[in-house]
Length: 386
Image (tube, rainbow, N blue to C red; front, top):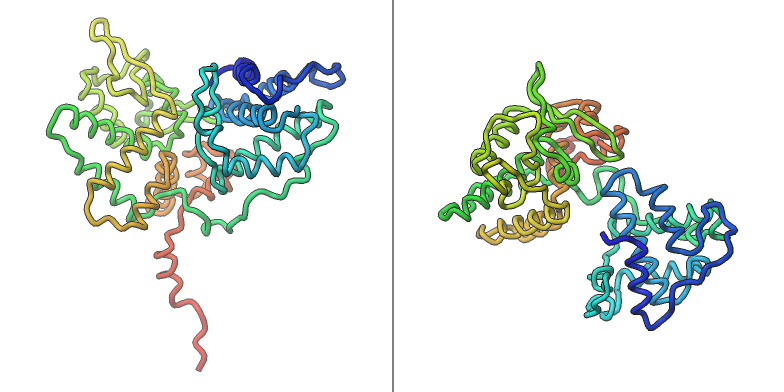
């Protein structure tokens, strides 16, 4: 993500609509002269829980400020509820000139609004970032009022277990595991692709790790203890947790290392990446490993993998295919936690600890209720009147 000031300045300089806001007098509690400085303070105050959170907050603030400056020609101080309502509509249907731009500035419009955002949890998350920004700036005295205070509560809510399921159903999970096994392995390239797909799915499912946890750790964070191997993870909110690695997970790690010629034995300074590129080893003598791929690269790899799995299998149910494609890499975490509770019969508190959640209600929201299983178990529940 490019620095906020550089990005917005580049946008403003190439804009034909309005210049950057002029500096007002310093009459606020954060010492900001303009919108860019105000947002920078907000990002440092609210976006520092993790690198992933900071990138997401920065991206949404950049997009919002670019829209204010280019589309509306106003500053944050002139923002109204009506403007926010218009931003709602803009996100769902941005004009083509915002989606396809040939600008050579350091941050193009197309990078900010590459596609429409459909209503749903993703859309709600975007607006929550904007609402948090405006609330913070109002509390700090930078804004005289908070336009977001008049926004309607975001999104229709389902009772737990009745909304969109984040985990794969039993049929979907069975399909994915079977389809991965059926990947072609005739050439060296195909074999390496199969091994990489198998490794990522095995590790993500076996550890229930988040995307950014995989993409920011190496094998030197694995330790041998009296009760087996563990992985020390610096996770969301800079919280550390210890994930036990069973024999199946460790065998997946050993297998992938062997495939690429890395020594099977782990060392204290082993920098083999948890989320490796196609070629994890950059140099053999002395041994030098490559870096982790980014979370975006991981999601892209997984999405293309899922699409190829569906395409290679004949007679796939269209509804199941659509459901599988609609889920991303994070579904592996949802699925792992669901199986720990439903199939391996861990109690919810132990699953919470394994997941690294601070609240058991968050864990409960990850658990998939199989609709078919629920229907079978409740089919005899009721009164039979004579």
